[in-house]
Image (cartoon, rainbow, N blue to C red):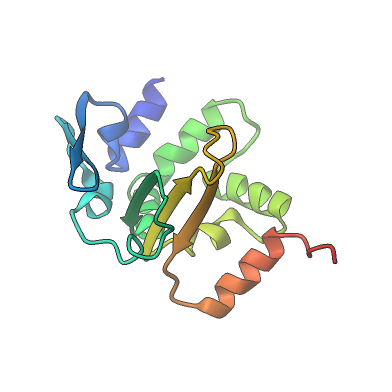
Length: 169
């Protein structure tokens, strides 16, 4: 779709539509992942910078998959700031019934018990990591952990409590 392609390029996230190569390799007691692309990383460049994860040392020792990045919320804000009009045009042209990304975020947020999906997205501005492991050895029964570094723990608690139903006792 030309409108979507244009919106992605304007948002600085044309990595999604340009050729790339990736390599997964063994190193020490784990794996490394490297990627290269002919695209300009644009708005997502900060998320792709090499760094040491502060969460890697606190996930379970049996973790089979671990990945982390940083600045998800900032990256989304930058992309929307630079290409919001094009993204809104693509949404309107999609026939989804939404007029803008804000409308989509508000409806998705309401479905989750939030004012807007942006309330959840805003929590992911520091480092965010995902870890998966298989404690029973059965690949159909993974366990996982999503960690994110937040600036406002009180706000994070409010959002998480809105998302999760009260536990049955």
